[in-house]
Image 1 (cartoon, rainbow, N blue to C red):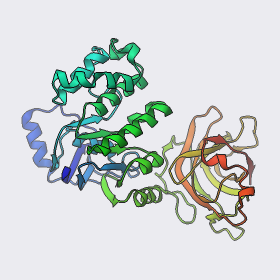
Image 2 (image 1 turned 60 degrees about the vertical axis):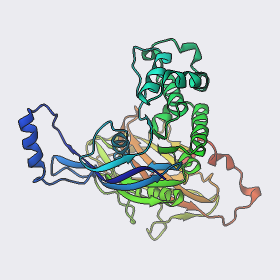
Image 3 (image 1 turned 60 degrees about the horizontal axis):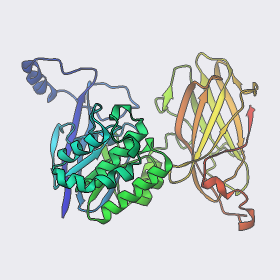
Image 4 (image 1 turned 90 degrees about the vertical axis):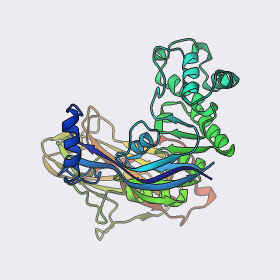
Length: 416
């Protein structure tokens, strides 16, 4: 039995304009839209039109009781899709069929009235879901206990911290028995213990035959919770299938650097115009990219940085992630290492990372910043590498904790 059917759904936005026109102008604009070029939602390219697809021809079905993970880079259309499914906004084209009651947790304070107390908001949310007072009252004690905000339940929620609001909102959404529960990355606001409780509750909810749609950048959470994955890219569905294949496709699609280590313009997460990273990679003596390193051998990283206007000391931040997209170790050069400085134009940087990693695949994020911490340029998944198991034995796995916790690593920072 289907809980949700999405049929060729598209959402089109007009960039740089607000809906302040008259009814006549709005109708006129609607006819004009059909004649204008509508661009794909590629945030790395300069827009050539003011009409853009936030979603384009999204088409899928969700059976009752399935836990569906929706992943993709920032700006891929995940939150827009959830808002369309939750009826916060209407699709520009296509149709959505929903069977049963739906509860959505899209952002902090979703569905709450700030001037009402936590208790009053529980009853309000229950009424919105179509429950009567007796049904809500039967679940009240479970909700309050799960949320952990019993002491503040008679306090207006506008006085709650963001974490407290998330706690109560999730408790309400999960315990008022919706047939479909939609959860965006809002759970990232909560502490680790509460996130673990939420994941356990979502597993219980799905085991009771209810449907869950879950968006997260934590691949470990997606892997442990979901039975199916959808990958969005530039507002389009790039993959729909098993969670493992979906995560693998996401990590590969997020690789921004070319096979030769070059970084195309416009691929940065953040670029303030002072300079940009132009090349990054692990190069062998012949100048070819290496993607596999021996267990316990150093990781030699080469970086080319083109400074447009800045000359002086820099900070280099490196974060290494595992295949679950969990950050496990970082490397940052100290403020007192004034030898790490750049001139205007191209500067070549050499870094040797202490290889603390167990055999497996890893991804590397790279940031160049000013001494005060202000980022000049930042690239996600700048490098993919694997540590071979050649020479690895249980006795040599001297630092296996690095794959389980986020720690600080050692590195040698050099100028060419």
